[in-house]
Length: 199
Image (tube, rainbow, N blue to C red; front, side, top):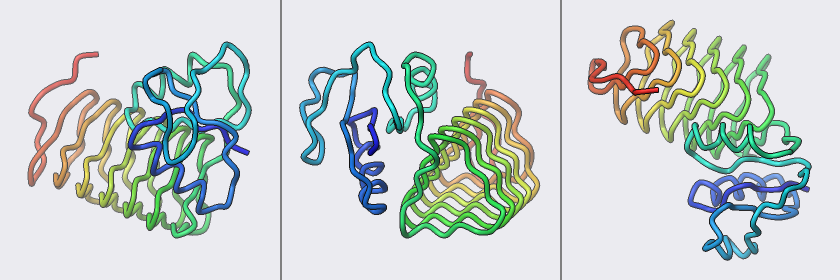
C-alpha cells in the first residue's frame, strides 16, 4: 500500500503509475484543503504523524524537496510504470517515479525523488542527481550529468557528455550542446543561458 502526497495534475499521472503496478493506494494527502478528491480518491489533510511508503506526487522540484524535508515519512522505492523500459545496471533512489513509455538504458544512476516523465529517453551512463525532473519527450543522451534540482523541459535534447549544473531550467525544445552552469535558464537551439535563477 502506498500513500500519495499531492492531488493536482501530476498526482493523476503518478496514480496511473501505481495502478499500472496493481498496487493499492492507502490514502491521498494534500495541504490544500480545497482539494476534495482526485480520480475517485478522497483527499485528506496531512496530520502530524509518521506515514509509511509515501510517494511525493508534486511536479515542482522545490516544493517536492520541502515536503520531503518537513514530513515524517518513509518513502517508497522507485515507482516504474509497467510500460517503461529499464536497461541493465540501472539504480534509482527512493521516491523516484518513472512514467509511461520512458526508456532508461544501461548503466544509469538516478537519485532520490526524481521524475522521469512520459516518453522521456535516458541513454547509457547518465547520472541524474536528486530532485530532478525530466519532462515529457525529453532526450538525455549518453554520459550526461544533471545536477540536483534541475529540470529538463518537454522535448529538449541534451547532447552527449554534457554537464548540467544544479537548479538549472532547460527550456522546452532546447538543444543543449555545451555545459550549463548552476542556477541558469537555458533556451533555444543551440541552447544558451538567458538568465540566472535567484536562490
